[in-house]
Image 1 (cartoon, helix red, strand yellow):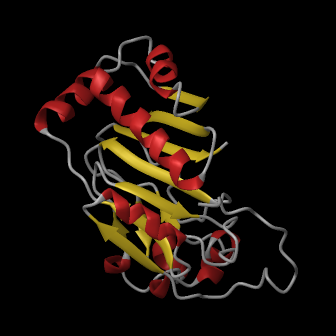
Image 2 (cartoon, one colour):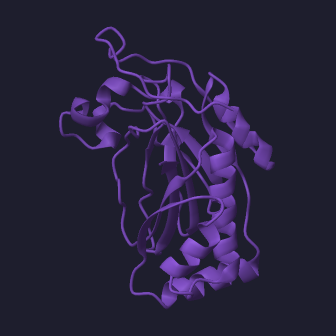
Length: 226
């Protein structure tokens, strides 16, 4: 598959407009290939963790004061780089899972390497709905509440960013109802189209960090083109 490439916007292309885009969600990993469909701006592989895996992740997080890693790695060296970056303290099952995601991401987009970010978060990193200025980003949460997003049919893009006039998302008119907000589950693997995906400049997925109600520490992984 050819990787989508960014291209410069002309003034006519930069006009804010609502374009019908849909989600593609399934329990099979092959669903992620739907991100190449022009009518899809989020593809989600729904998966859940076994109790043992979740307990290993919790023990790892509890033993760390903070995790914040930004790495560039390839499918060939992902396991070793991740193991070294976590000083051999991360459970092997977690390292293997992250390395597999690097391999899948690079294979899907024909990349030699990917940019990985792994972080523990105690509050919302990006509390406002926004669109990433990237071609596509993989997002998954290993512990805690997962990413929230808005279906394209329920968003007024003129209210994103400065268009909110300083009002919170819930009051700016960005979306009609709180029930319009969708949320990933812990463990889900999501591909989010951004504004640099060709012909998707005005319809990247609007999403935000979840507002945790019980202050659970999140463990978030993202993958980007490197």
